[in-house]
Length: 383
Image 1 (cartoon, rainbow, N blue to C red):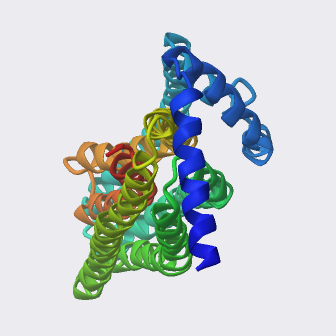
Image 2: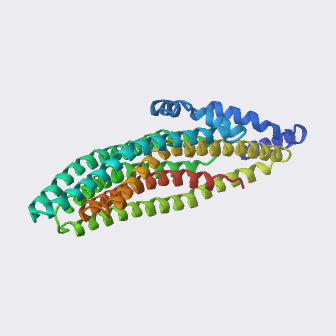
Image 3: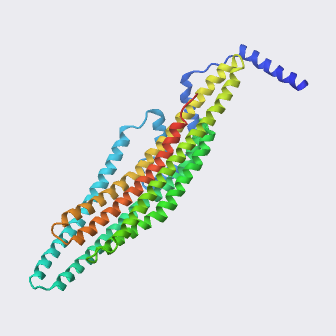
């Protein structure tokens, strides 16, 4: 009974204190709340990652501050456009030489084949084809190994960035009172990281390499002996990418349906409890909404900065891979009228393998992008 009386005395005291000591809250305090929250965040690892990656003009902390103040300026667009322009010009200059060499080889083979046909010696024509095909295979394998290196390094960079980004984003979600959402995002994000690291890097990339080698060996002989096997590899790779995409999307939808609902329920209970106290109830509710609003702005700025950096570190390698795959396709189209169909078929097979690499890298970036974007959007409301 004494405990109950003491509880009622405390409640009555708070009620009278709320009547005589009201608290004023002003909207202009949002900026100070944001600066205080920003001081609590640690972007050191993310800034170090960008420095090691070679993006010296961009810092994660500076990007977050800019987003909180004025949004993304035109300087970022100019920087991205300049990087894309430099990358594409370099790739076109490098691949143009490869394209000219392949077309020249195909033209020389056509001349030698017609010359050998005049002597009615079929083995000379076949010998010319083997010589040209081996030289071309060495050239193509060199460029394709560079292709594979660009894609694998880009995937590793995205995985490394997400490993650093996830704890920082979860901390920003805690400031917005999204405890359940932060826990769900942490689990989902590291599942996506593991999926990309194990499935894409360690399983699907070697399968694409085997697919390309089978395409080259399959066109070495007149009959197509590996066509069904290469088709099987292509379907397995495509289905693996699609299944991973559906799995990640489903997990994100489920997590973002449950986690934010729990957070809103907890916030609603706290708001209803605080509103019972006369005088203090309104003040506490106003301060709570202001703090939650500042936390949500902070969280969304961190998430948006993560998306921008993810695009920065993956866009140039993706365009390089796309450009190289296009040049393979163009080489197949140019050499088809003047050379043996096996040469153009080999180039077409390499172009298909290159597009599989492009799809692999694009889906990986998309999975990370969707995981961050859906979580930020689903947990960005106050009720």
